[in-house]
Amino acid sequence: INNTTAHDHSPEPIDNSETTMSPPSIPSKSSYPKEIIDPHHHFLDSANNPFQSFLRSQAGDVTYLPEHYVADVIRPLADLGIHFRGSVHVEAMPDDGADELDWVEGMIETGRCSYVKGFVASC
Image (cartoon, rainbow, N blue to C red; front, side):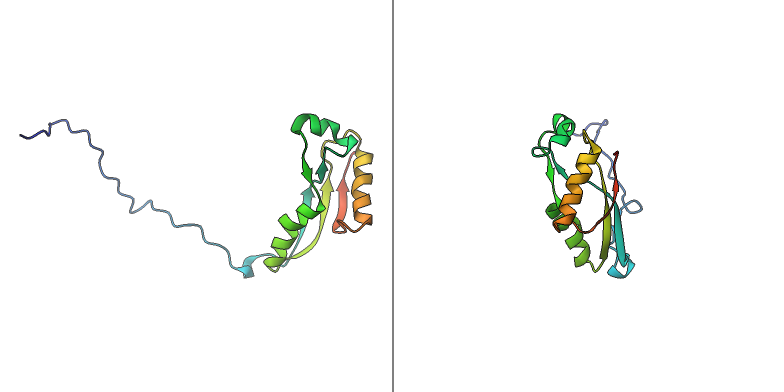
């Protein structure tokens, strides 16, 4: 018995010969910049900073400190042979911009983030 009908709805095979994409190539180290300045990052510690109460009300307890930044940004750049020249800290919705600036400057003075070379703050 032949169970095939004249209305076979099997999908047509797809010809991918012209649309198959190659995986993206990873640039060689020679195409990376030799040095970099990060123009925008934040430090956060909403659980311990009273000037971040608005941020805490919106995002909960969030923490991102200089040690995280070193691990996430500076070390990986160094591993690629890229010289990290510095960064600009941008305020993160503080209740008082001057208080946040004082907090970051205090971390700079104690050596936790001497790489911060500039600020964007509402003081």
